[in-house]
Length: 284
Image (cartoon, rainbow, N blue to C red; front, top):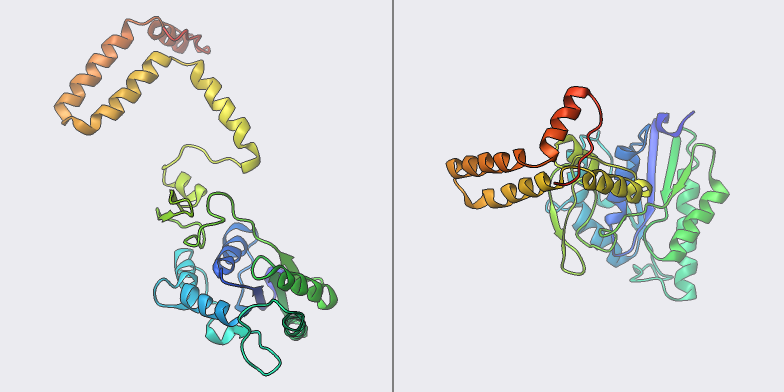
């Protein structure tokens, strides 16, 4: 049975001081993936500081990014609250502030392995583990434990966030609306999802990242082969429209149209349209 059809669907993640990996992974599974894997519950394994970061960043009333993601994409109820955050502890039961010593690593390995063993004991559950967060050793232990106890319905992933968002502490997931955030280099970026921006007609085309360079070159060549003088007038009209009232803008557009009619490209475009053939513009 496919993992998304199991009645109990669990997302288990290890996190450090960047709880964003939880919402980034949830977005990838529940929104991007087809068919979607929508967890019925989420569990975190983290340090004492990581637990506080998750509580404030994901579960608080504000900003509460986990709750925002569920609302933005109309996800069904997902069990995830402070009781689902398991804090790794040292030999005397105190929360680990970090995982640095061999003893810290041993305690983390034991806790991670025990958690995976318990969650995979339920035959009605499909477990998805994310190794995107926390110390590299935590991700290794989580992946290794799934290798020991994992079943056919269980899965492992590592979510990758593209530039410029991967290093921004303000980015939690692609939104369905414009949200400008400050990046680490103090530049601004919009978190709106590319396909949502296309649906809202904010952009003209969305292509896979691997095809971006080819698509850009194709568009540039098409524009270069077009009526470039007319393109220049259009850009100027758009730019100057911000400082004109409507009558002045209409006068400027009328004058630009008259100027375009005097160019060689104007009758060529008209003739090509009537003959139903591709035009041959010269930029004149």
